[in-house]
Length: 169
Image 1 (cartoon, one colour):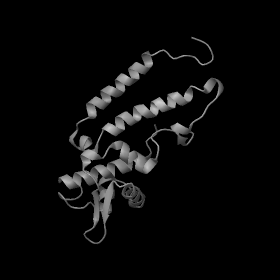
Image 2 (cartoon, rainbow, N blue to C red; image 1 turned 60 degrees about the vertical axis):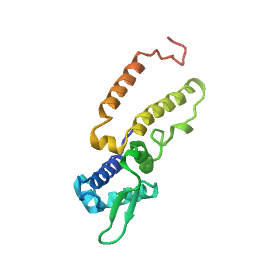
Image 3 (tube, one colour; image 1 turned 180 degrees about the horizontal axis):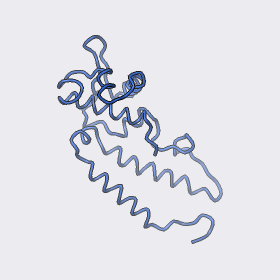
Image 4 (cartoon, one colour; image 1 turned 90 degrees about the horizontal axis):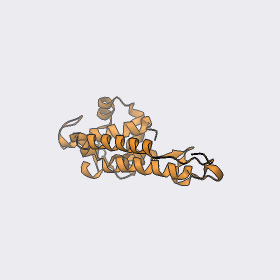
């Protein structure tokens, strides 16, 4: 998985909007978060952020309100928006192989098993990002279990024997 600047910025902006609704962040409690304030507080170029906010709005994760009192608000509670929702809204597939979603990767011959590996990687990533919500990140919950699960998954993967597709051990 590659986390692009766009994905990182999108998550930071969504967290700032969620924090604004709770009373900490670039806007007082319950007020709309303005794009300029989000850009400044998160050190994101405003022109780049505006495109990201548009994608998040189109994905149904943000509401935008026009006017001098306008800004952005979460479309759903922070407990119902996962990191995976945000990543998919701005980047599409969680895992890509040669620029395409892992699901469409196709191999034949000795490399046929690679598709299964990429799908397993995609599933493992989805497990973590889909169960971690914006609210979890704001409260600090869910951080340690995700780290433990990741370490356990890595240790498990290292301990599991890997079949050599060429016919070795």
